[in-house]
Image 1 (cartoon, rainbow, N blue to C red):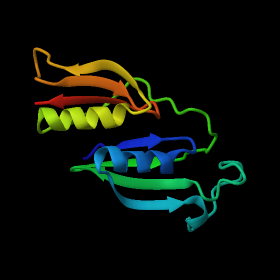
Image 2: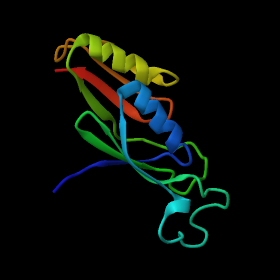
Image 3: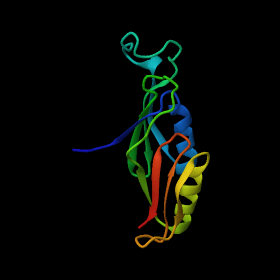
Image 4: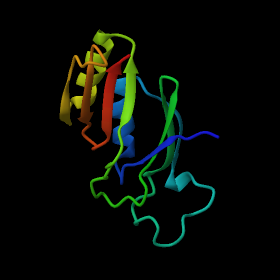
Amino acid sequence: MKVETYLFFNGRTEEAIEFYKRALGAQVTMLMRYKDAPEAPPPGMVPPGSENKVMHASFTVGDTTVMASDGDCTGAPPKFDGFSLSITAQSEAEAERVFGALAEGGQVRMPLGKTFFSPKFGMLADKFGVGWMVIVA
C-alpha cells in the first residue's frame, strides 16, 4: 500500500508546477489536459473554456511523487487546510534555499531557525496556500 499527495489547484496547476520546478527542482513525469482525455468529462463537470486546463499531472520532488489537477477549474483560491508537506533538507544551506524559494509570494508561519529538535526548522504557506515544513534532520 502507498499513500501519495494529490493537490487540487482550481485552475492554477500549470503555474504551481512551474513554481515547484524553480523552487524545488520538481520534474514533471506526466501531464494531461482535459482536451487530451480519451473520454470527455461528464457534462457540467468542467466549465466551458477549460479544455487546456490540467486534468492530471504527476511530478517528483526528490524521491517523492506529488499529483495535481485543476479539478473543477473554478478559479476560486484552493484551500489546503489541516496538513503540510514536509521537506527534509540535507544541510542548513539547502534548508535556507528551499525555505526562501517556497516563501516567495507566500506567508511565513514560523521563521526558519534553530529548535530543540533541529538546527533549522520553519513553516510556511506558499503562494498557492500549500503548507510546507522545512527541516534539517
